[in-house]
Length: 115
Image (cartoon, rainbow, N blue to C red; front, side, top):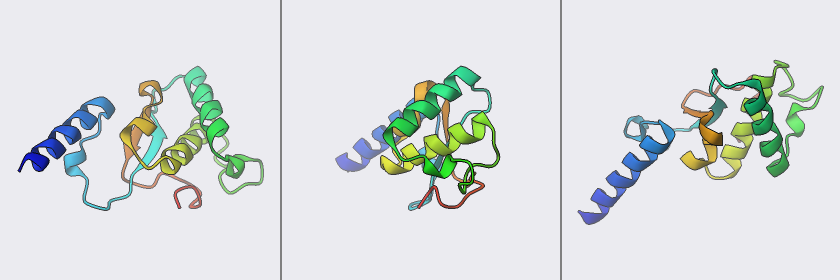
């Protein structure tokens, strides 16, 4: 009983921190990290640079499977998701100074970034 209460409190805390309502996620449901549409270009560029300094962003190179759409928000979202996936899909791995958003629908144009 105490562990259930602890788990509930942990999920509540995570949902408050990330803005994600984890009680609506089904067990085993995949999650993805994308940039919030309202994120300014400087923050998107910083997120892209940071994520790509931590994970291999080769899929974003011209001719790569995730190059298109060729926009800053798309590239930042791919990089943020690569980082999020590689770090275990924890809410804090999609924070990006409050510019990340956890979603349950695969947003990628390329299917290679979430495996």
